[in-house]
Amino acid sequence: MKKNLIWLIAAFILTALNVGAQKVSPTLTYIDKDGNPHDTLCIEDGQAPVDVTFHANPSDMGDLTPSYEWHFYKKDGTEVGNKELFVRYEEETQYTFTESGSYTIILKTILDSEGTQLDDETITVFIADSYLEFPNAFSPNNGDELNNIFKAKRHKSLVSFHAYIINRWGQKLYDWTDPDGGWDGKYKGKDVKDGVYFLLCKARGADGKEYNIRKDVNLLRKFVEGGRTGGTN
Image (cartoon, rainbow, N blue to C red):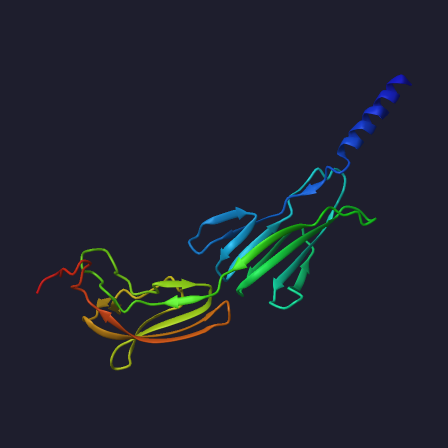
């Protein structure tokens, strides 16, 4: 009898110690444009499109089987402030951000059938506005290993992209759909002549901005940084 009483007291103490011990520690994971993985609490300067996985990370739940609600909000610039987009109900959920803006994701955790809840937890995601800029010239195969590819000088948060290189007769020499890609100054594997070519680029940003870029591209194989010339005359 005394032994049973001791066990009951011990069980009561353990239960008392565990009251309120349940918690969630939400985080998010994603891979940036450079291929680097991130496991963090927020995104402060993200580029769209970006696939993000949200993790509740529950702990000390014991025999409880919690349910989860991820409420996704986007700041809309009105007096209301945030517009609710949707709700997800998994312990771990994924979403692809394709629009720029400021997002708030609130995790609600319900512990039991009586509706007992933990305190709400918040994660923030900021997706930057877009931009796209190209240089005027490039110098492939000139020996300095610099500026060998004609590509975007700066770009951010582009959700669609298609660029073309055209010669003076309107013939397409090359095209690419990856903003990080570019033209190496070749056509069908052979170097084209130095001279002026033409860029056409159509793109759309995560902020809805449409890009329709048309500009000259100067191909200068004998130019090197510092104003010197390379190659043979």
